[in-house]
Image 1 (cartoon, rainbow, N blue to C red):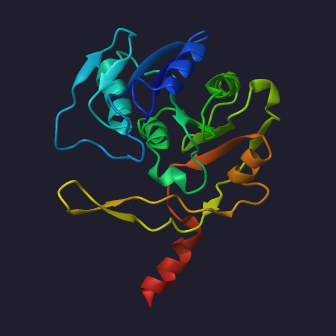
Image 2: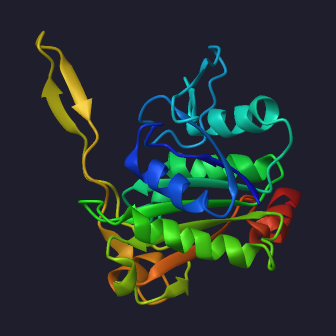
Length: 247
């Protein structure tokens, strides 16, 4: 299978290198990734500046843009023919619950789906980020399944893997998104010139983290696989909205 691979931690990230090395044992992989860490970039596109591309000694393409830029550029200019799959990761840290709204890792996969291709986003959940091989092996398993059971046309897969040795992984669970509490307040500080600056505070704690959620699966030692729809229409509200507007 021909695969386009990207991430949001940057072209030099260990998670990307491990994922490429393991997936490339069975598939033809092209890496197009940001030239820097773009965590939190979400679906941003660089509309007001040109993108510059550099070919690394590793064969990876380094792009002066966001994760979404990388996938878009990879599909429209770098690759001569469309790949069969877009894979984004391995993210250094979780993308659980509300995280997917801000995640550049998930955004790269979403851009692949917007461009008409099935896509997977994968993250390693843990503070130390040791066992990238575990997440890469899980991705390889999922790719094998996708070859016989393709994704629906409006979905991507958000995969989160506990930071444990592969042998200690309890299995894979299909989950729904959990939900966090409101984020902690921003932190006020001063720069070296005495001017006020603000830093983002910690993410909110888990609020909806019960059985069936991505948070719960990870806490129990399972890999979480959440199908995400790229069509954000609230279909259940259409009839009510029509009635409301008609009054």
